[in-house]
Length: 181
Image 1 (cartoon, rainbow, N blue to C red):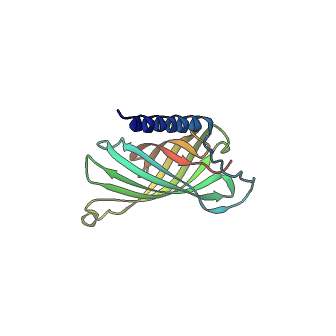
Image 2: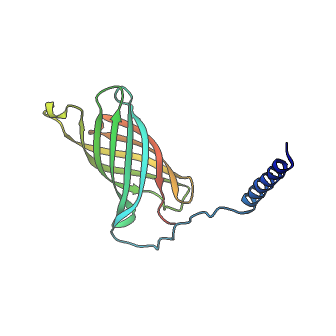
Image 3: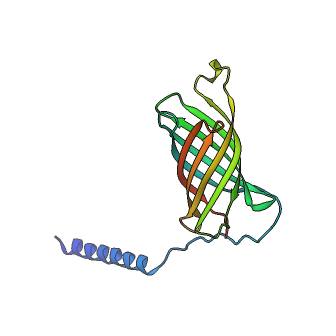
C-alpha cells in the first residue's frame, strides 16, 4: 500500500466514523399531527386511510386485500363513515366488494385501544360476473374490530367482517392512519 492510499483510507475511515457519530448524536424528528379540537356535528372529508389483508374463513380461505378511507363523522366524532374496497384472490374466482360502513367507536382516539362496531352495505361481484344473473349483488355488512396504537400517526387494525347477511366471514389485519390527537 502506498502512502497516498493509506492517507485516503484514513480520511475515509474518519469521515465514516464522524458520520456515524453525528447520526448517533442527532435525533430524527417525529411528526406529530396537529391536535383536533373537540366538536359536535357532522364533518365530511378525507381524514385518513388504511390498508389491510386477511382471509375469507367461510370459503376456501381466499386471500383478501383491502383499503379503507376515513371519510368523516356523522353527528359525533365517535360515529365514523368508512368506504372500503376489498379484492379476493387465490383458491377460487377473484372477488371484489366495494363497501360503505358507519362505525361506532367506543372510546376516544387518544386511547391505546379503540374498539368499534359497524354496519353497512357492499356491492360485490366476482370473475365472470356477466354470466351470473345475481352478480353484482348487494350485501349487508357487520364489522367488529379494534385499533391498537402503533405510532403517533398509525394504528394496527384487527377486524372481523360478516358479509352477505352473515353468510361470509372475513378476518383482517392492517394499518390505518390516526387522526390528529
